[in-house]
Length: 299
Image (tube, rainbow, N blue to C red; front, top):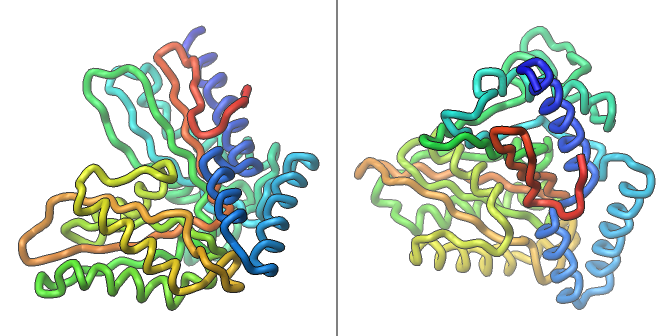
């Protein structure tokens, strides 16, 4: 294929992948919801989970998104420096979002700030959002696709703690967020926590934490222990599915961290709702693709 054909081919595949992500939950999310359904003992909680599974069946049968809020499209791109379409990738993703908006269809969720009009295409100034990691000595690209909803991820919070607050301060911040707004984010939640040196670095890490597979752990054993302690603590709040009470409020807690300035502890929380619509796809230099988040998908 020449370059123009390659751009068209990848745009079409990404548009189809975006549409699929909006309709079908990732394999790990489906498995976790089934596990939590089996653990719940209350009749109301069990009924809500059964409704979630019915929602997924209807989304598949009717070929429609599984939630009316298809969110703001966000992409985390881990791109090798030798990937042949690296220069065209950001524009290509924007075109794929427009295509998916009409083919999926996706709700129109891009409103131009200050001008206050909806573009009707899910693209605008700075949307979709693309976060970049450039990887040396590679010629492939990994793309994490995420639909960031108005009730869950987008109202995330971040702040910088003074060093005296310590890790207890991080815990208090996370629990304050969960008890004040977790109810509105459509539990059971996947909770992403970023711990870094400033507001913006922590916030980005908390979003990247949501891309990790459910059941994975931070490679630092102390951070992994904190993930488990936070998960247990949030579950004890008793939010339950859809905030209607239950034994389990989260699908997991993921912490991502960097080193930090000795005088600051940046911390941020982002949450994915039960309908955690994220996908992971890898393209090699010849644009052959591998999808790791969803099995049995042909684009």
